[in-house]
Length: 304
Image (cartoon, rainbow, N blue to C red; front, top):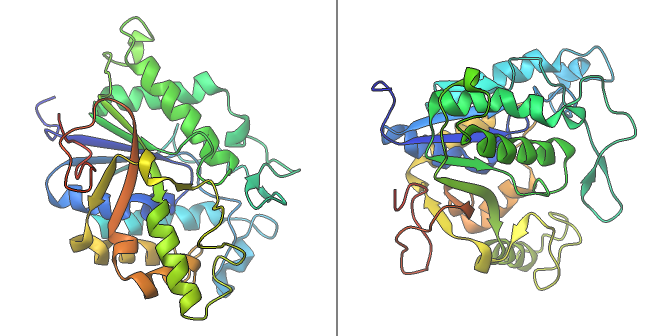
């Protein structure tokens, strides 16, 4: 174990690009500081929309092959962030992207068609065991994943939450699956989040600038989607503004999925790099460490 960095972060995400969108700046910051960063991606994102015209033939409903493309994009994104330890849950191709549909209320739900070997249909214990082996190998003090709704309801995000939380519990039990390694109890578990105050400020700036189409239907003073979390429920804000360029490079690497005219890029035009470089979290296991003047931890490892 002496070869492991002193502080180690494990992130569990559903598809390539989720990690860069949600915690890319934090990942880059911690790598630069010499901390261990391990990413586990649960599917290859085979059902994703292809935004590059010349690659649209790779879409699942056409010729297919998007998995290999997104694996390459993920590798390029991790190179941009400096992350050298990134893995697919159970190995590449073990679990297939489940796809999704949009509910009339504006959140994601499972689609009528769910592919064979979809992650949504995975046996929870089997999937968790793959992650238990990683946890016991890497021995992270901190785990980051989604909340119970997966942010916006995507079935793969919800399943990633379930697998991560269950695996963390199983990995800590000394008598459970000794063949998967020595028990390890993760000290702090976080769910990634979007700050309500930040989101409302961004929406106000967009509307004041005359933009009524970005996040269409969202009222800065009204109800917001479930991926927006009350600041009262947030515990941590990692300021990684010095690493925004690396996050932007990682986002650009996911070329089939992300375009520079997306809604969050519109937010950043009004709020600046803080949209990308300050990332928020909810602590759901462990003890909040020292906080700043705003009442938030500035470090996921605070207090350890």
